[in-house]
Image (tube, rainbow, N blue to C red; front, side, top):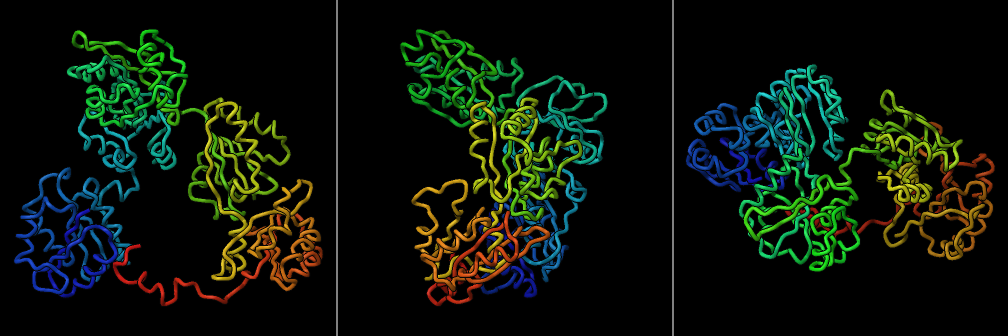
Length: 607
């Protein structure tokens, strides 16, 4: 944002200086009199009138009356007016004055309040009541808004808590957020046919589809459609874009949801491709013939194959871009003018399909408050939580929503786990597979991912805080010490599962790095023996049992006594062994805090 900060007295100069220093936007401070570091203006009112439409935001530091009188003659529309915020000279209150939502004044107010340690004063009803800002959702989540009635009328229905149906036809980051934070007067539906229309005064729909409805509908059009295009050489675009848009609507799809225009490299310079991309505000994706050749299309053409090497350009390009095997609209032919033939086809982005989905979530080391914010949100929306019962505290499953199925995998075979997840997946439901720590570290997820891949099941991994990080925190240690230890080794001893020859403990110990040893409490004697081949006997060690759990125990000692310490305290499962001189070390100073790097802390030094 390009921001003008206006001060009228010496009292506001310090507050204005903090704002200029902390905000990274292009900021200029203007003053009604000569002041160092400020641009002098003859009159604040005259300056505002002259530059009202030049700046994205005005921040007045001083009395509210000065702000109101200065902007009053300039106010035109919330859709065009800049953001205006008023901050008192002490920085105690930041008040959103004008263009709170669309202009961004509300968000700027919150930022200023945080910077100044003050209180944000925002009076927009949706903000004060904790409701969604309907006029901002499209921009926030990359959608396009479409509505037949004025937005203000639809917002009034919503903020007055009239009954609203939320139709989530696709799945993306935005729909996840709406579903997880819906107000009490909003009911969620995934199929339009299931909505009892007469119960509601408004439908909020996130969908590429068009429907006829007797009550107002506020559409948010997500970019989830991929438009494959083929045409004759130098096909003239006049009238074709309108024709394609009209036919999309006849198929019940909104042109506003077209995310990409897709074609073969042979057609990359065609005027029609450029015109479609410009009119639909879509990305152009060009594929070489080799990338499309093997894609099976429902309507192959021998003639097209002779010319391009591809059985059908429009269908293949749409399927490729959408990562799909099925089209929403199969190949359609057209020619608005003679000799300018074209074809198009449409596919729905695979990632946007509202069907089954699996999230592999890292639960963290144990404490329910150490699961990530995203992990917690996913647990709250899951239809099935399948958790590693012997390793993950049951308290983490208490985030589950009412009606969710929560099962422990401790007594299940791998095949039983797969069968349960696939049952929920095939019903189009959302599954969280909850693993301890970070699932990518000894999480045993490789077999699961292979199964998901084999059956074409969609999944994603949400990382978690690993227990080795919890160990560093519990030991109040920095595991990397300047000029002494700069590496951390995560490994395990050789038990029933053999270790690769090159990863034997005594070989890894040669570096004398900080070593975090998982899954090895039962073979502490062997671990100690191997480590003593390279580490000095007095090397600090720690045995960390149930890190961050309610019964967490930490035992410290020297490497020569590791096995005895483990036996004496009866430490077996879920104990991490940490070895290295970094444990509890307070020697050595990072160069970051030496004289060599003082320039990093000077004002305006960048990163």
